[in-house]
Amino acid sequence: MHVNRVSRARMRTAVGVSVAALAAGALAGAGPASAGPRTAAAPAAGCSSAYQIQQKLSSGTTWTMCWRYDSKAGLVLNDVSYQPKGETKPIKVLNSARLAQIDVPYDDGSVEYDDLTGFGFAQGLMNLAPGECPGGTIRSVKVPDSWDPEHPNVNGLCTTTRSRGHAYRMQGDSANKVYQAQGKDLLVYTVNQVGWYEYMTEWRFQDDGTINMNVGATGSLSYEDYDAGDGRGWPIGKGATASATSHSHNVFWRLDFGLDGSSKTRVEQYDSKVTAPARGQEAPTAKTTRTKVTKELAGDYKTYRWWRMVSASGKNKDGHARSYEIVPGTTTKYPGRSFTKHDLYVTDYKKCEQFASNNTGNCPAGTGKSVDKWVNGQTLTHPIVWMNVGFHHIARDEDQQPMPVHWQGFSIAPRDVTAMNPLTPDALAAQNGH
Ligand SMILES: [Cu+2]
View: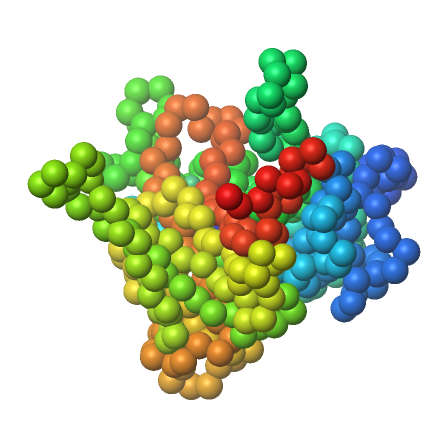
């Protein structure tokens, strides 16, 4: 985003600088490898050990996945599986997960950037200093179509672990008996510079099976856009002269679910309706209904609405179909484009459908270039989920300098993947059901 000729030149300069940093990093060794995520002797299916990320968290949960680096999408995570301590084998969750676009329209209508497909998001991969991947491993990434073809390798992929506070707490039968656990996450991220901005693409894999995907924008406000003289910006320098033009960041993710190893995931929408108390009733009532989504969908968030992806075959030990629930994040939906008008799109898989807008996937003529065009009534056999999360960025004085990271994203959470809390302590393992 925020790229014009001037900042393009700046980008190229930045690449030159990062080559020097890479050389220094290589000499210093890429992070404290011994403390980092361990690579298993036997790689997961589908990738060699160099492209495998595997982390057993201290609570006993293991996450395994393959990574690759796409010339437009940047980091792609494939074959993501989850194995909590009570399961004998890994449970596949996703065939593939990645960004599908960052669309950045400016409020004055002057410009709109498609950062992934048009402005070199992937090529802007940044070298990471060891200090920004604490306790983890920084891997070298070969960047396709690198701006500096002689130096395509960037120390740009961090995998590490982080604490997230309480996973649970429960008072036992005496005051000094407290069941509690501190949750741990596997954290996988890259930083990609696009113009003045730096985007952190972060994936958090919790030991309870939840996956959080977020994009954080930091770096610097675009210097060329301090010209909002028409009331569509916010003054951020002394007085009222330097006005930063307001804009939106519409971030898209593309998720290909592969629950229990099958792509034939079913999609369900749930809505609840709350009704005022009838005569003689003490409280209002709520009724939740399920709608099976069998055809391609352009869906919108609504209070009391949620979706889940249900495994075609897999059941947990209670005999319930395994599923993952889509947990919305905060969003400001941008109504300016057909492809940003909905929060979620579900399309039937097509190889050429790769980016939510300005698709570069070489679809046949007449197919349309954005995700909304691909929702055309087809029956879902292999659903692909496209999530659209928007943020309207009205700059503030605190955005200088550097700009504090502002995050946007969402989560997917296991629903009946295991028969109980995957972190249940042994002493409570009998407390299932009634
Ligand atoms: Cu912004």
